[in-house]
Amino acid sequence: MADEAIAELGCALLNVTLIQVLGYVMKKSRLLPESALQGAGTFIGLVSLPAIYFRAVATLDFSTVRVEVLLALLLGKLVLMAVSVGLGRATRGVAEASSGDSEMRSGIFALLTTNSDDLGLGLPVMGALFPKEMVNMCYVLNAMQAMVFNPQIFMLLGVGAARRVASLSDAPPAPLHSMVVTVLYYQCRNFLNIA
Image (cartoon, helix red, strand yellow):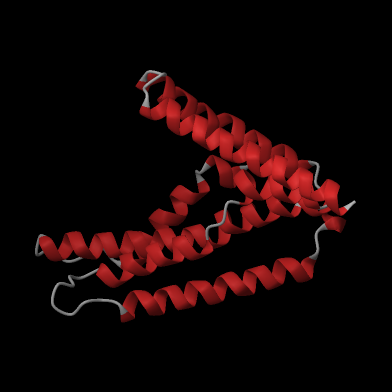
């Protein structure tokens, strides 16, 4: 049983790695024209990935979702967000820092610490090790990241960028509430969030 699980895990990791290497080689060697890459990216981002999310969530048996695991991950990611904001402020250099730098640095730290590859790597690995009911948690975790954490991260980045642009042009920054409303508006139009 354990040997079979390890073999399935190795096969899943090998498949993911080979697909990534193949994509890298095709991009670097220009085997596909740039227009084909843009078309594939558009199709994947606007059609296939939202369809996969929608189908997975529509067929998900929510009785198999372990609420305690979901809450633990939510709490852990909230702590990571708070630490990221603290690090963004603490690592701000006094001499070269301009207005908005700490918010942008906080947003980048938060993106790097909370954003996991739940579908690209998590789904094959979880599928190799756990039953299907547990694998469906990947979709719930990905939705939590997209709808709870990404808007906060984008708000940090947007506020930082607006403050930086305003400080460079000696103009007052846009009001904070208008930036927040703008980020939320575009999040509501995001196909992945709709799915």
